[in-house]
View 1 (cartoon, rainbow, N blue to C red):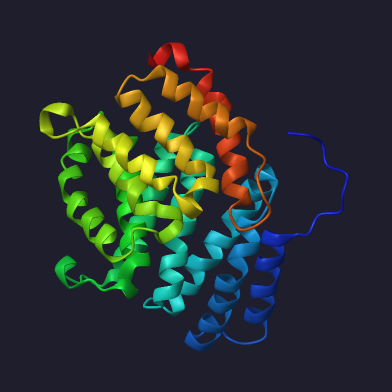
View 2 (cartoon, rainbow, N blue to C red; view 1 turned 90 degrees about the horizontal axis):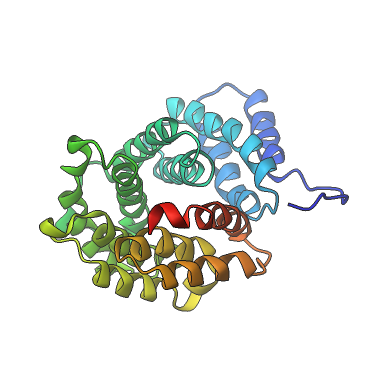
Length: 278
C-alpha cells in the first residue's frame, strides 16, 4: 500500500472517543448505554469508509470492546447486538482468518452468539423482513466458522442447519448487505461435500447473482466467489479472472471502501497460492 501523506480523519478512534466522552458524563446505566450505542451505530459507516486497512485493524478492537461493555448494561439492545455481530464477524474475516484461524473462529463464535441474542430464539418460519439483519449475521458468522473448521466433524455437522436460514433470507431480502444472501448460498454449496449435496455449479450461479446491482462494486463478493466456488469447481481460469479483477479495481469512496481495500490485499495473497489450490 502506498505511503500516505495526507492528514487523516480519525474515524474509528474518533468514534470510540466520542462514545467514551458520553459515558464519562454519567453512570454506565441503560440510558447512557443506549445513547452511546446510537453514536456507535451512526458512526459505523465512517469506520467502514476507512481506506487504510492497517489503521482500521488497529482501531477496531477498542470499539468492539466498547460494544461489549455497553451490552453489559443493556443486554437486549437489538441494534447494538447486530452491530457487535457484524463487527466481530467482519473483523475476523478481514484481519484474522488468514493468519490466525483459531482467533478468527473465536470471533465468529462471539458474533454468532450476539446475533442469536438479537433473534431471541424466534422461529425461523416466523421471521419477518425486520429480522433480516440479525438472521443474516447469525448465518454469516456460522457459515464462516464452519468454512475455516472443515477438518472438524462437529463443525461440518452444523452445515445443514444454515440452509433453511439462507433460503429464508433469499425469500425476505436477497439484496441485503450487497446481495449477501446470494453469497451465503454460494458459500453453502461450495463448502458442502459433493456426496452430501455440494454443487460447485449451483455455487457459481449464486455468486453470479451476488455480483448484480450493488454487489458488483463490493469486491469481497468477487473474492469469496474465487476462493470458494472457483476452487470447489476447480475452475482455474475463473479463479484467476475474478482475483485479477479485484486487484485491478479502483475502490470508490463510501462505506464499502474498507472491505474493498482488504479484498484487494487478500486477492493478491490468494493468487500466490494458485499452484496449491489447482
